[in-house]
Amino acid sequence: MQDDNDDIMSSAPPADYADALEVARTLAPSMPLHLLRPKLIYDRVAGFLKAFPGNTAYAIRANPEPKVLGEVFAAGIDWYSCDNLAEIETVSRLLPDARMLFMHPIKTEQAIEQAYRKHRIRDFVIDHPDELRKIRAHAGQDCTLIVRIAAPTGAMQGEGYRYGCDIDKAAWLAKEVVESGFKLGLNFHLGSQVLQPALYDEAFMAMREVMYRARFMLDLVCVGGGFPSIYEGLWPPSLSDYFRVIEKGLARLHLPRTCRVFCTPGRALVADAVAVLVRVEQRRGQLLYINDGVMGSLSNSNLPWCQSPVRLIRPNGRHRSRFEKYLFSGPSCYADDTMRGPYYLPEDARIGDYVEMGQLGAYAGAITSAFHSQPWPEMVTVGDNPPIPKKEHELPDDYHSGIYEGYESDEDEDDLPPEAPDNSPDDFEDVTRPRGRR
Image (spheres, rainbow, N blue to C red):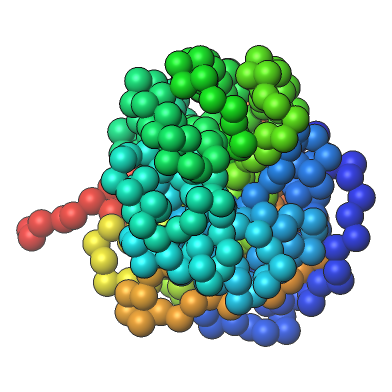
């Protein structure tokens, strides 16, 4: 699927249900349900533990769901990258044996003191003298302060100019860290969904320049996250390509043997491990009204590079084998709760069907809002493989192309009910366009 680790054998625990169809038939859920596939977490974790030249710390902002955290820990990761006190407390409560890095450059004084004294965190990222002053006042000198360097642009979702300091400021801040009695670390973070492994090499060049100017021994180096996952029509290079670039970059730094090396992946560990099962509540032509949306688990669905693969789940009966394209409307009273896709599903999709949307393990549940008093989504485990995204050349040209290869069914279409009536406007592209009075 995502990388070269598909042949890794994992000892993931047995699942609650065989697949999404069994979930739909058994539970008939009326609310969106998250489907966790632990075996994929085990495989992704194994890929990092086997090939990354250092420690892997899971960035829990990608998915803080307790079941996910538990599977990541059981798969072998005991380091966690946290950005605030709430995440630190979550890890401490659920995984008391875990170790943590405090990786957000801007922290409250209370968070620093709690992290140091209560949760025994000794690694803190900084990118400004104010943060150094806070840590001086609220933590001991047994800490490693990790100076974050501004990263080159190029990730599909970068963090812009908000965090990290340029080479001159990073070198000055590094000297201040050492002169204040702390151990020194350096860090960069390229953003989310980095498709060019060479960007890591550019970041290492900046790190080398800071080391040359500061001339201090490093206790820690962190290359951040950014390792990508696959989405519909978007298949990035394999993880091995990234690791080779990182290994070369680390070798050019000539680090002491005592220096700890970290990466902090989130998306790459959990994206394909969670799918969302939604129910079709209404159909109007090619517009399907579903019970989840952009105010819930599908907040990233309108990013052009973050399209989920989908498949229809019909608990009772069979569907047609001809596929057409749809767009979705979420349940919230919010004008932009529309997901254009297009999503390719059987032409006879109807009320009561379920749709399994894959590749939603990263940031789906984490960004779920409380709009309309929606509850935190429930999660069950399933044992089959998720919907697999198509590569760019495999995507159909239009929705009149017949069977959408990869989601075939072998039913006798004469036994199926007639297709749903088409109540949509003539132009599919205008379905969500505001219409004035006539």
